[in-house]
Image (tube, rainbow, N blue to C red; front, top):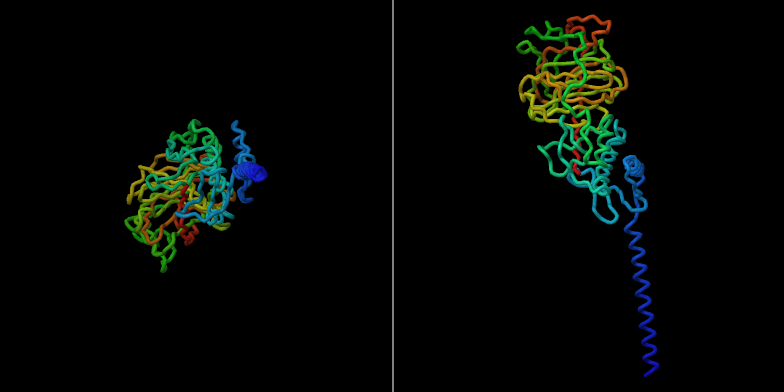
Length: 403
C-alpha cells in the first residue's frame, strides 16, 4: 500500500511538472506571436519611413519589437487596404490595387498614402475623420468609411500638402495649412492676351476649322460657338499647337457648356506636350454634378474631387487656369477655387479641351495669355493658324479607395 501511494505521488509530481513546463512554454510562444514582425518586402520601406516620420514628430516607434504584420490580400468592394485590430496589428493591402500603381507617376506617394492610412489606424489608433479644409481638401489622410456625398477618398497627397498631412496624422490638432485658404494670395492680373479664338460665324470653314467630321465626331458652328459632338465611347482630348510654352507662366481660359449622358461626365481644359507621353499632359475638369477635379495623365487617377457651388450644371461655365512659377491656380466663373503644384517636367505648347464620350460640348472665347513683361505681342488669332489634333482617350475607371 505504501509503495502504491509513493508511486502515485511521484506520478502526480511528474504530471504537475509537465503542466508547469507546458504553461511557461505556451506563454513564451504566445509572447513571440504577440510581437511577431512580418512585413512583406514590398511594404518594408514605407513602414521604416513611417517610423522615421514619427520620430521627427517626437513619437518613438519600434515596430520590429512591438510587432506588425503587413501582407497582400484580395479585398472586396474596391478596398485598397484593411486594418485588423489583432495582436499584433495585421494590415492587408489589396494586391490588384498595388499592382495597378506600378509605373505610374506618383506611385510611391500613393502607396505611402495607403500604408500611412492603415498604420494610422493600427499603430496610432486613429479613426476615420471625414471633415474638410476651407478649400474642400480632406482634412486628414484618415478620411474613409461611410461615403460623404458619394465623394471618393482621393487625396492630393503630394508637394506642399504631404508635409501637412503627415503632421496631421501624428497630431490631429495641427493647424490648417496656408494652401487651404480660398483667399487668393498671388497676383493673377499680370498677363496680356496672346491668343484669342472666337467663333463669330455660322460656318466652321469661315472660322478656319479645317478638321473634317468622321464616324467618331462631328464639328459645327452653333449660334456663334464651336460645337463638338462625340459619338465615341471614350473621351476626346483636342489639342491646339500654340506659341506658348506650358512650362512658363500663362493664363488659359475657355467658355464651355456640356450635355452628356451622365452628370458625372467630365469636360474641361488640357495642356502640356502631347507628343512625349501621358505624364506630360495636365487637366482641369468639371461635370454637371458641380464637381471638379484636376490631375496629370501619368497618375493613376485624379488628385482629388471637390464640390464647387459656382459650377452651373448644364450651363455655360468659364474655366481658367493660371500658372505662376510652379503653382497652378484654378478659377471657375471668375472665382478662385483651388491651387496645387504642376507635375509637368518637359516643355509643351499644346492647349486644348476635353470632350466626354457621346456628348455635346460648346466652346467659345478661348484665350491664352502670357506675362506682361514678355516680348510676345498680343494678337487676335484664327483657328487656321493652329495645328489641331484629336486623341481618343481610353476611359479608365478610377479605383475609388475604400478604407
